[in-house]
Amino acid sequence: MKPVIPKEPSMPELSIEEMTYISTLVFGNKQEPELCDVLFIYSGTHPGHWEKAIEAYQNGYAKSIIVTGGKSLTGVPHPDWDKEVESEADVILTYLLEAGVPQDIITYEKKSTNTLENVLYAKEVYDFSSTKSILFVCKSHVAGRQYRTLAKHLSEEIRYIPYTFDCYYNDVRVGRDNWMESEEGRKRVWGEYLRIQHYGELGHILPVK
Image: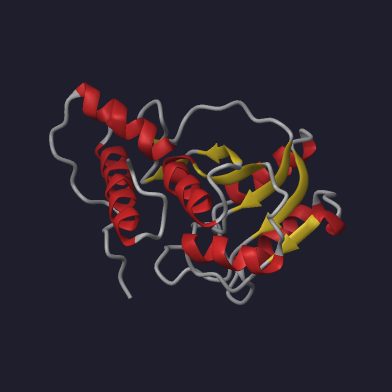
């Protein structure tokens, strides 16, 4: 099944003010990392998913860790991904354990196939009722949508802090500071903006007010 919103739709001509607004919406608010109750790892095949998670643990930002991910039905695996059988959660978990993260602080699910399911299935294996703060790992240009998914299905009262990594597409880095400078960046970020609007209207994520 193809995604409703293409990964790289063409962005219309926008003003500086409009692009600034989209940057904040898509990349989320800038926040310094801090010790949180939970480190939530969104699934994916990019090495950043486990590298940033390991970094967060080593920096003392996580009391407990949630790993999510079965297999995406629509995503294209990272070029370095050579795992044919394991779920994304299995692979991420393996890297965490190899890096010395204690298994007894890790909870995982490996049924989810998209961002919404990452959160819904995580709720089945972890009790968030006393959670006050969540540090979440994801690609930088999807942080806004990932935050809105957590806030919609857990609680808006929880403090959410993104812990992100930039990605390269066709050797072009797409980050908060440079996305508007390349066609690749503009397409990726515009696609995320459209997804935030679309999934907000569907009720899958916290809508834009």
